[in-house]
Length: 509
Image 1 (cartoon, helix red, strand yellow):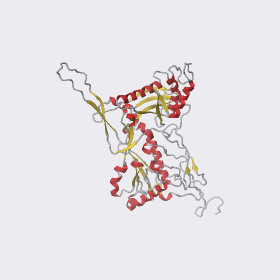
Image 2: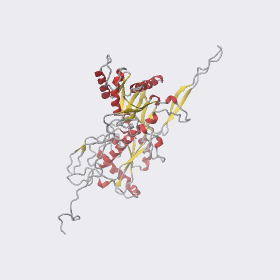
Image 3: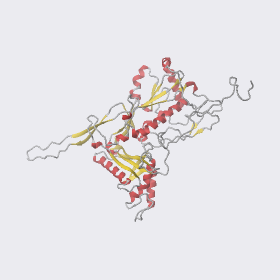
Image 4: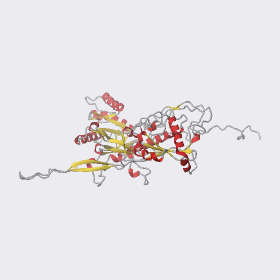
């Protein structure tokens, strides 16, 4: 936990954080300061004061952010638990050998033996991601240009996604972001780390691949759903293939959502869900909570098609623009179904409302990536993700994290490890670097992994094309439709003339 504050898992007054940093510096002592061999190079801009991002006199109090947040993601809905196992082994029974290939002849002969079962072992690894605050000069914190600069700024809509669950629920205890601009420099820089972590986690849920980890171990990726949901399951000890653990993977081969080619999209999604739920029943794992995950524009395109195909096999044009008169088909009923699915965020499959999770961190292609995609169109994947099995009694998808509160800090408490602390129940480890004279930085680290215990109940439909009228804003700077802009270096401070600066207009020699 953070010295001299409430636990970071709860709500923390940002002023407590600033005071706690001061206490950490003091406790570091002269020995740590003497370790600093470099000259500090503080990195601006600061919030207030000369050259600050809000170092302008007379600003209104309320600040509105246009930062595109991660408004929804699969990662925020996944439950979380701690672990200290670096190479866990998950055992499975993958079937039984046949026992019906030989029968006894004589009545007194021995019957055939019942054959034994087959096994498969799976494993996974922790990822590792670190960030560091920009270096700050201690005595620069809190400076203002003059009494005309206001420090009571209140941000109306905080940039950190407050509803982000999973690994980042109530990050660093900053449940209230309104006052981060009110002269609280270190709090604002910690918040920058939070935004950076969220931008890393969101796409890694899908694209994470340990093969991309740094050779020296400084950066590690956990295994994302593009690998966890697949037909590549092998035994972790013998490398033997384990087909009964394979996921249901189908390719829509870059056809549009309103394609009439058999099987169309509605038939394909319905069949995949039926097969996965059937597997859950056959394996004694039903009922399974399987949810569908896709990008928001794709969901809206699918719901334009779904009611027509669901309600009548006689629809010749499945976008609804030219439906043949069919006795009993009610256009208004189809519109109501579409609107209900959108407002309730579900697809109606075999009479059951299947929840749909919208996630704009799913990868997306356009015409420049693949010329089979029409200009103005996009292609992405649809995921079928099992959250639990046997009516919720078995958790099948969850985060694990290396718990620093249990496994690290207790061991170093006896060696004066006063510059380290944890937050968020031990999810994040923080450290105060030895100061460069009056300049300091704070480093942060997390080691997470994503566990999918039932890949055989998961699926993915790849390369589905949709053509929206207009693309929504993307939350990640690496994406094509991310928008930002603005001043990045702060505003110049006034330069009044004084005894040491007398050259200028109106000054006689």
